Length: 277
Length: 277
Image (cartoon, rainbow over all chains, first blue to last red; front, side, top):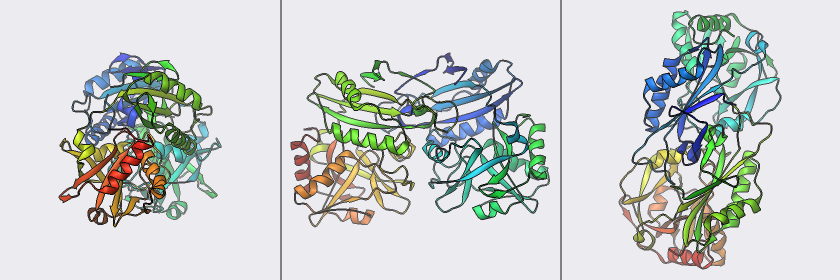
């Protein structure tokens, strides 16, 4: 449950049912880690949000307003999650864009999720989902509010010992986890799936891509098969809240927590991109 | 704008931002024509809504409650639109289904949309959208709240003289209009696209399919190319609110308002499936 919410700067957690976010999933969101009163990767989240608004032709709010409002919610808390939702705003019935579009901004503070400590240290069990992502280049990359695909994939298991599900596309390419991006290390090279047709262009994924050359790690963004993933030396998943979790099992296949994974995680933490968890 | 809304039976038009309908588009909807105090095709809408809830594993509300609440909104009005939204209800952050799911039901009365009279009599101009629907059998057919694809397709034009856009899939099969289903008549045979991979299984489309044999019209549900559509003798679109609109132009190609289109429209009106407009 959210601790506190501001809608367009006003403390309320209720919104009109005419908002196109509810009517059609017509909007975008960001989920941002808060540590020691700081919003981690704030600029990167805002850039993606602005790009998403541009692609959907949704008016982007004043950045200073977003920062002020998010900051007013977090105060000086140690750990938390800020979620920003931008919707196209209110409209009548019908898919046509309203002539005048005043987007709505919904900023909520959530408690920090308490995941098992061994997820961070020893790694997680992962399954391969049956659900396959649809190819949709127009919506690929952005963090929009149409998330039934992720819900269908995530609904395939309830076993708490499985922390994430890997989702492939309809051509059996590995795309990402239901809530995370995925990387693997093979022969000291880092690989992550290309996301031109589906998937979310994750902030931490992007940061790792930019960081790789600085860390002298060769990186490839490419089509990745499940077979290639399963014979990798190391596999890890990442997102803005969990940071980096090593993968210790994909179905029956086991992995050790590798040196590269730890190296990358440390580098992200040193740069205040992810929590120190 | 909605005239009046009931959320779970209570007169309010505001909902918690924690509702998964807003957070993820995690829900379904129905749009129902009201004529002379009657909800047209009520049973058919409820059957589709229930099927949608089953497919998304959303708890389906009591049918009698839905009927009571919708009826209380329409009173004895001549013309209007009832929209029912069912969401999975409130949840925390994350795609996983909440353990206990109390769906929310949002029932709103909207004014009857005043479309130009010639849309009904002389037919409409239609364009072919550039946007292509993604193939997604898991979500095909049901009227879920993830509607960014329709919004992208509908955002391609603002010219009021174009009443609808035809959307193809990524393999160039004709699927439907942005807000309607499509039929064509060739050599006295009726055809409509199969919707196994994308599209909405429209109530009027389904009624026409069931009605065809009664009217002694041969009907095929099949893959339909744009070329086949353009050389048809008659083309029409349909949905629960507009009923049947003949198509008079697809881009540069012209059609006459045909006998079969008029026959089907009359049969639907005689059976109180569509408005008498």
